[in-house]
Picture 1 (cartoon, rainbow, N blue to C red):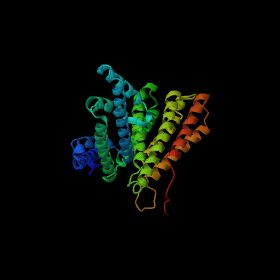
Picture 2 (cartoon, rainbow, N blue to C red; picture 1 turned 90 degrees about the vertical axis):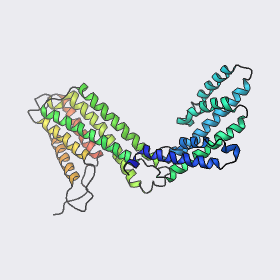
Picture 3 (cartoon, helix red, strand yellow; picture 1 turned 45 degrees about the vertical axis):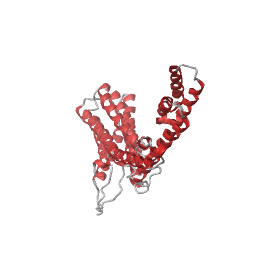
Length: 360
């Protein structure tokens, strides 16, 4: 069952079933159409996409692109009968690629040139008849593909989105913990040492954002959308909160690495600033790692409550340090203050407050 949750496995099953059904249905049509039954599975495969909305979109855009290609090929062929075939083909391909720039066709645009060359190759003897056979059977297969996508475990892509969020959350927390460890050691890496780590985090965040968008598209015209509304909403909230925190953390890293506010003026590491800042970053990492409250029936503090407690206490110590700071370097003072503000904003974005009270 776990393997069946993979998007590519679901798509493979849907595409195979849709192709088989469309072939059988096409064989039941009159002989002038059933002789070309193999076009129907092609339409089915085209239409089977990750979401119901994407399937419907791919179906009508592909059909439109095919018809445009056919029409273009016939028009150019009739107008250039006296021209060598090589020039006719070149002109058709040139114009087809121009038509493919129409944004409404999206990913299905390449079907224009494919259909145009196909028509010129095998359909010029009777263009109307060929267009009906090819486009009609492709549309039949596409309709079956959309139907199968809608009926057979219509995808919401929830599993992939959850996995992407978990991966991004782990990288964000590790990034914070690594920075905290560096502060405690008294050595903050040079900016270029963080480039690879930042690139890895950016990629994880981009995959997370894409997965969230896929879930949003998957909810359109999907009969399962109501059932999984709560999970989809949670994915959206988590993804966007983590995205905001990642932006703030990027700012924090820049401030700490470039300005090293714990070392401005007096040797603030010896004076405790490095440790206070490290505790604050570790506290934020703990909240990032613990996104949920326990689902049990207990009324006492759970792991998230404890993580929030520690993070708020550490942020409070950092704020007090900034308030009482005697750092002589204005740039360092303002950098440390900006870090404190960023931490507070990050905790707010993560909804870091208690949801339950301990019973005494």
